[in-house]
Length: 327
Image: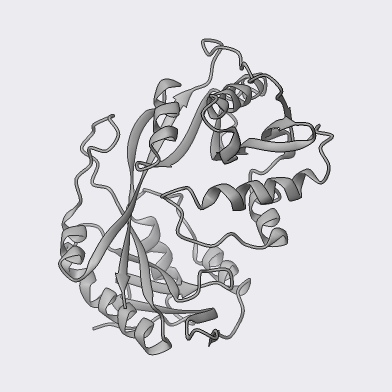
């Protein structure tokens, strides 16, 4: 029987459920309470002049087990910067349960989405990885097939990849008229504002991007000042004080590993090998900081970036598919 999440009793069981499959770092009930405490206490959902859902709010549903445990959990939410009409979602089941057990939870999310006036529900499902290291060979799992039969569609397929960072990589060779720098040392005017503009201009071309870019302060808190962010690991390509490309790298809990968060080049500067140059620029710098492995994610429809990463020795692993349901 599906019911609403109970904040007074369900956090320990939810922490166990979210930590059960080992795919992510284990989480505690205290951590989950702390995350929720940072969110607004009440929903503030509204509609814009075109009747599209705006504001922020969420629903959380659980399928309780017989011993106070949780057999399934699902949530749908939107933040103020989420595109009008959209809801994001997540559904998790206990290990070993058949995919069909999650369908009632999806039904609950869809009902809530329609009640609040959402236009579509976005979700993500992990790949069933077959061990192949070639891009694009994972086949959809059983749950994906069930959801496709219920009106969902696959909107994007994001793959993980990793590569060694070492002296075997060639040095970066910037195109004529450009020089390479970092956000920590650049003399470009208002470099953080320029970087935010670079994100805004390039994310629209990324087939793996479905959200809206947050305003500057929120974006800066997440990308530059959030966990792992450091200005000397934001690698820039510049021309006459203008940042025309960048690779943003985040530190991880493992000092030998980093995460390449985003690589972008303005349209007018594409086709010159600048993305590859930026990644080599980053690798040379990171090697000096003791980093030996770089991890990243790329949408398989982003053919140029898949090609760049493959040429640099990235090996492809599992990822996730983004599913969309029109409500």
